[in-house]
Length: 389
Image 1 (tube, one colour):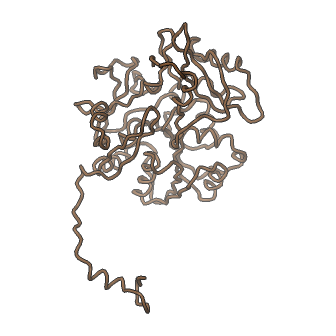
Image 2 (tube, helix red, strand yellow):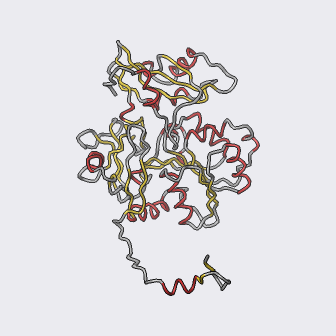
Image 3 (tube, one colour):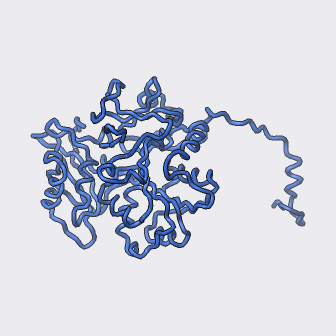
């Protein structure tokens, strides 16, 4: 038992213990030293430890002041709903703390409690994965929730449909900020500012962060022309030191000239806005045509009776792979598969529309809200090797 701030019978004195202790060796860490190790989502394989350095986060915390809506203020209240082992939970926490703001932590994502906390605590900023936004929109009582203190809702970590995004911006009535990045880039890369949430840009992940490099490249590492699909790559002071004890994986991810391969397929338009199609490994090849699940999911969500949806490729003797939608019904509704397919065909090319629809009670997701498509694919590819996509 130790007495702090005064003496107490039978207690050791903190002051005496402190004076008797040897002088500690407080070697100042260098910018190259690791400050944090987060793990990747593991959506396509085993999670990898990402080594993030003091230099990485010094750059991140400086750059965020140049990102519209991300310069939190000392009197702001920031609600943390993402797991703290996820880069979004870490970054929003660090940013709020670095600004001198008030941090409100919730141990679990409890939708009714989230709505109550936003109103009671006067929350100004939060980060939500798209699945969280979708769930909140369907939570009873949201119509009566007072969102007047909200300044921004940041989102990212997985694709979001236009229907969900439009409904959320109308309901919350504040600025929405999309962040596109990876754990390997401290979550930095591109951002869609509140002012750019309009028209076809709702499908975009925005412009490059100031002082970072973002490009679309082919397999050889050559930048492709605007409008051409390739792999999105990021370069700058926020790039990780490497994967923990995984030198081969590090070499596969970071090119010799410093560009980090995200594994995401997408393109940049003539105005410098980036559009993400999907993970390269999740791409469906049907009849020689590339189909990106996120695009199809975006076309499905908004269909009456559909609460959630994921799209996968399943074996097809004629086309190699066929597009299948796996949907979650809204409570009390029973949508017809043919209606869902027709809804999608009105919004995207016919060959991209699902050929079949299955229903499940809930989609398998990891803790950060990403759909585990490999789990959805597994029963359809049992006994067969998925040699496309």
